[in-house]
Length: 429
Image (cartoon, rainbow, N blue to C red; front, side, top):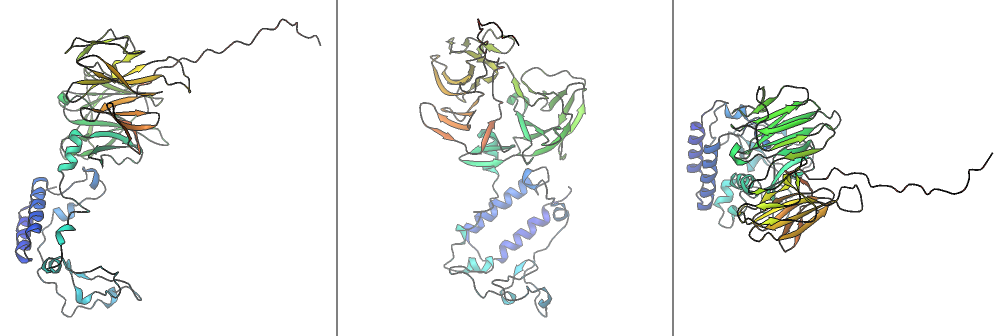
């Protein structure tokens, strides 16, 4: 999209000079235009504008109309038929009270131009501005940087300060997400699955800018995701050559490019053809004698040299550090059997200085992550909850999973009792 903001700046200055002055409005208007100059027009790569292109506006020039041309204007054929409660008329983008019909506005309501409202000595116009549509992207980007990212109704959301920010609009398609270490960039990859076709797709969210790429189609087979050193997403699929999802500026969908690279080292996500998801990673800052399933009976914390044991086998894939590195959280497998009545995994918070473990949740499959230094988010049998260490638990209504997939053991069926043998001889016919 090729355009310049110079003409828009000139018209904004003209508008500012033509309207009545109000200090609070000038501050809001100035800050909003600074944001516009910094980011320009939105594109369809931004999730909120995915289905709305503003190119016809951005690629043209417009001039501010100081006074609408109403002399001799006949709008009879444009009028709403019959008696109407309210009919507002705008000419060249400006409200014209003389042509509007306002016979029955509700008590306490007014309809007038912004200039008239500013000029009114009794109107606190600043209390109404920016309440519905905010121009400030700061809270959104802050939520991406420090907020909790969850899956709710099959889409990704970032939550910060009790506010939810939608990151994808797949309408229920997201089945998994992969957030590499920050050393590999700031890209969150997600995997979608068709509700009827079961075809897979891979897309991404740039956590630094908030831009989302649409999911690129993949075959409905076992799939692996890993992060490349330059911030791309390596995609490997059963029976196919590997590809890399690149995030070139200006591309709405990203591009899947064939590569000869083997899966990069480090964490990787596995999406099974059957629908299961597993994160493979070796946790930093701890050591253990991991088995081929990534489980260990004990771990040693490098910083304090403390050995941590909990009932069951610790899942290395589940270990996450608190932001201040004073605690870590993990999930342990406590049973090998598939028993619907008995939880098979337990989540713990560990004090890294002492090695003391505190149980925070039980379930049949759990994922855990930190929300600040003293609270954990847990995805379990009853959705997602946030629990303060030693304090209250708050449900995140609507959220179903975290970015990290849940850990669930590969259960073995419970042994069943053999039928009792009878001493009686079989009856003869």
